[in-house]
View 1 (cartoon, rainbow, N blue to C red):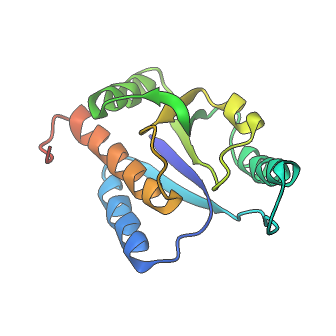
View 2: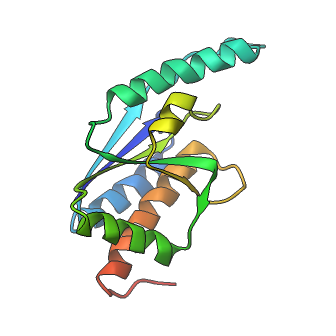
Length: 159
């Protein structure tokens, strides 16, 4: 299975990059993982709603440009569906059984995702109604993908 994580923004702090490296290493036994960072569009100080929408649109165009037409797309959105780890694992397994070999997961920028990206998603997923820093969300997402593979293979992993 090929999994691509598209993320708006760059990781700067070493503790985030170390965590991403660790989960990337762990996932290498289960899938081909690719993480693509998309440059955040510049938002002027004291930006109004129109400028914020323009930023989301610019980021959205770059996100959509990087998605293959046959990919199954999961966008991370506050108003998405909440799943348990077991339900998420079951969903990933079902995609594999259906022959969906390419999954793209999207973490938007600080303003969220453009309507075009949201409508392209085959599934909208929420980890919580809370808001998390995008850097942390990347680590949480990779951990849950790793957990899903462990669950699906009936391998031991901490609870």
